[in-house]
Length: 380
Image (cartoon, rainbow, N blue to C red; front, side, top):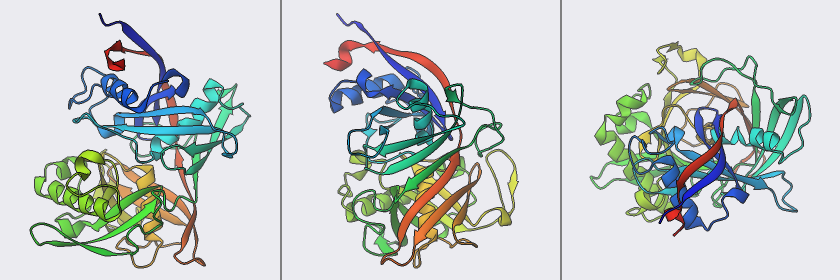
């Protein structure tokens, strides 16, 4: 007879993502059991995720497992990110999530993993997925996040207090350097003989960049328009799978199943006026380039922070296909919800150039705390 299992957790919005946060002590299970728990909790695989807490999109089907960092790690908190597929029984542990990372420091402050300091608490975070380090600056009042503020991020209604995330030396998260293929630009030939120029850049996560025009897009499309183009989606996934093989993540024929989240893939285009998902108009001068990305087989509704970091790095490196910004040290990305600003510090004296840090402003909020309930069949 199955018995009820209740696991403590917190539901946070981090940036333009939403997901569950667990203390690692509350998930003392081997990886395969953790995966079954997460799939059951989110209601996957099911496009609606109706029997779980997922929202039916990659943005709302995410989890963080957190605990204190170990001795000698020069960090306060260790984070383990899980990307839970909506339509398939897959949990991808391969990368990082910048949006969800914005709530890690909040969780640490509010659950006692770090001692809060007013008016701002510095939380040093290390990723268990890739080893990358992040410094989160959390505005604090009365021992918790000071939520009110005047900072707005496109895709989230209203304003809140700004949380700065500084990613330290994010280049080469997969262990193969800033250019995992060894080149700033490569050619990928598809099964139909079509050749696509790409740049594969790894900063925070490995990302495959291709020009929007090379796959039949303008770069101004909104996610629903891209999802409706089956021919485009198939080409992008084929390009991603071939790139996955080239950089040693997975064989091309298995990449969709074994590594649906990495490498990421994004299309870029020169800046141009466009209409956002919110129905507002962005003039060409508001951004440096247009960018759209895919996430777990679908067009991302906004743009992930880690992909933005890789985009900013690629835009700052000579020889890539990503359009260069108008000024050094700042890259403005025009994405479906609006414009994201990435502060990028490069060391151009090294060969190849090195990404010293990348900083992105986000907001976060605790939405709910309590327990997720399921039966103990997932433990067997």
